[in-house]
Length: 59
Image (cartoon, rainbow, N blue to C red):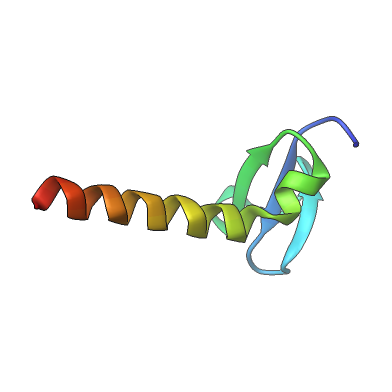
């Protein structure tokens, strides 16, 4: 696993180091390339988890 700070670029659908596209177009930072490559999947999982929590809260 490579160490450092990595991002997922939403414009290019690619993993980038810190010297990449502007922050507005990226997800991250992530601790390694492998995690950054899963950025969209991780965001989807978090959204689904929070939607479930909202449903439970609202009854």
